[in-house]
Image: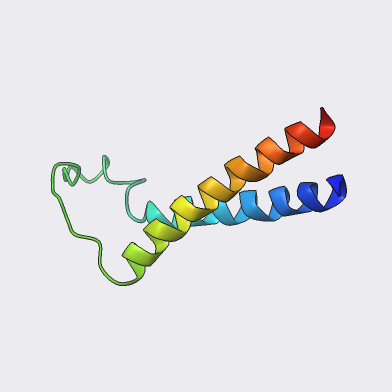
Length: 74
């Protein structure tokens, strides 16, 4: 049982990292160009909205799996 939770944690963490990185498109070099895009609100639509909710679900799943791993090890 502990092995399955560990594998699920690894898969969930990789997916969570990927979803967070995909959300930060164009932010990395924003300060170098002199453009300030931080103060502009844009509505999430389509794939951005889906990716936003996937990230929330993955973070909740990661929390639950981590809590279960601690309880089993415990």
